Image: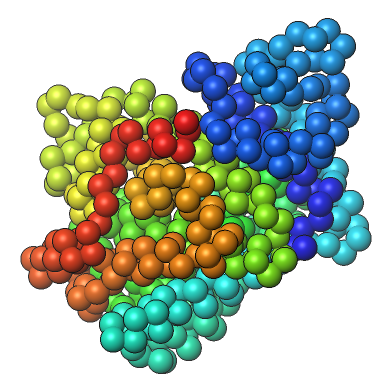
Length: 427
């Protein structure tokens, strides 16, 4: 296994409790079915962790109870529980480090390597008659992408956001990743990450770096592909909104393909898909609520503010339906929408993207675990065709680029994303 079971089970418990806390805070009546499936598969292990902090999950009522008082935990109690679990993650990760295990760094390296191979297979050999990137030199360059673990040693506060960022640099062929092993000795970096990711402490940061080790490489590698194919997105405000849309829309699908491969090879446990899905849904619910509550400024497809601003969620849906080709408001990345903004829409379209193809989560699981991801491979190939077919060596917003996108969306029958799509995975 790529990660010790001792550390994994606490991360599972944290994500399970966080999803329970999210549902409680948003007054959702029940936990998503997939969260209950995760609990059922790992009941003994999760209950052991909960018992260690005097808690028990009541499966009939879908609540956590204090084992001393039998009282259900409210929202604030659940927040406190998440902090306790995050502390436990930090302790167990330290034990792993002392034994020479750098799980998160190793996972980042492995997922990046496998994602490169997955993109190459889908874009060159999946359909030999439609090679999306025939230049072998470009693939050689992509396969030689160097992962640089940032040492976090600048000691200048203004540099912290850059040092903790995961970033693709196609020109230098470098994928920069924060050095999670050194993070423990950088309290200002930890403080920044806690504040901007709404996690309680260093252990919470670790948990999300662990998830990001699977989520982020497939996203960043699309930016390398955009560089190889000379796709240019020049007219966006602050953010390359088309480029970020495309990288985000396909990223969770590639992530699931890589995880499925690792499960079938015995490198990850079968239930790991549920863990990833639970985390994706938890983030989606939190970010959707945030966007639904944030009102304007919005856009008129040129970045100008409208007189009658809508919710940011409405702007998000407009952006998705246009396949990233209209421009959300110019200040979505500014401090006015801190701490989410850009992060919200990138995470949400990765979830909406895969659910639009697989509205039934169990069908997706069966395809990955029992059919070697054949259907997911086909759908991902079609999405990559929409992104890259006939849209290379050009500014994507030009007339030719827009027509090529429109033609590909019709040719490959891009499924619609609606604001009710997510309900299928929640029920």
